[in-house]
Image (cartoon, rainbow, N blue to C red):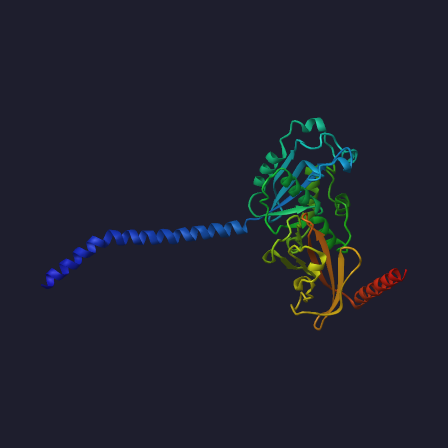
Amino acid sequence: MYFIDRLCILSILMAVQPYLNIAVMRAQYLCRGKVVRKSRKLKRRNFMNYIIFDLEWNQSPLGKEQEEKMLPFEIVEIGAVKLNKNKEEISRFHETIKPVVYHAFHKKTKEIIHLDMAGLRYARTFPEVIDSFLRWCGHSPKYCTWGPGDLLELQRNMRYHQIPDKLPKPLFFYDIQKIFSIVYEDRKTRRSLEFAVDALKIPKVMEFHNALSDAHYTAEVLKTMESNQILKNSSIDYFRPPKLRKEEIYKVYDTYSKFVSKEFSSKTEAMDDKKVTLTKCYICGRAAKKKIHWFSNGGRNYFCLAYCESHGWLRGKVRMKKVENGGFFCVKTLKLVSPQDAQAVQDKRIALRLKNQIRRHN
């Protein structure tokens, strides 16, 4: 009897053994697959290149009245330099673009850039070139430009040609012109690229106002900076502002904080929003008490003064930016300032009140 029972058990195990092997192999495969996918993900996350690019563009040769409103500036050249995370050059991109809107150069454009309109007729069109450029940029690029204008015009040209905007949103980039001022000057002054090249004694081996040469010089300026000086001073592109509350952007820098709001139908609606008017100390995170409530200078800017018990005076500024549907979004900055700077805000408020009283009296 005992022998028969053991024989039955052995028969059952032999019958299910192939299924057990398959289950074990499947489990091992799935686990191995997860490890592989994770390692690939980590590898891609650590893979980062600086894409330093420059654009040359043309505008209506007949003046602003004759320009294409959806495309005031048509890109005719893209030049770019790719650096790895160690700021070593690994590749270059350069291509001219066949114009489809403006077939003659504006007189100012002709004076600055070194291109011939006849030669551009044999170039590829913008959709073809931008497709090659974005594929060349690769995964996780850190876009770098001299000034904020290039990314704006790049996206405006993409929209005009009905090319889906696959750039990240929100789009953080690195304005090397601004970072040059942060690292080498007073954080406020904005210099020309040639000024920076001369100040840093970078050899002049190419002409300026050519897309590739300007990208080269911008890359050379970038190489003089420490990586943390670059990466902690990112800028935010506003071509596609937040639409919804969940898309709003809040970022803290070394000397100030920045908040980019969702869209509002009017300035009044924007300044009634609690997140727009909140004065939170960006160091300790606590709400700072307003000493002077938000007031307008008569334009698109609003100012306030608040006090943090732990860190002192905070100067607030809200810039109203228009969107194409007629609404507004806000860019709010809060910055710790000296008592003298705080007094300047109070003096500005008093001067505006007196000015308004005189206007009403007259």
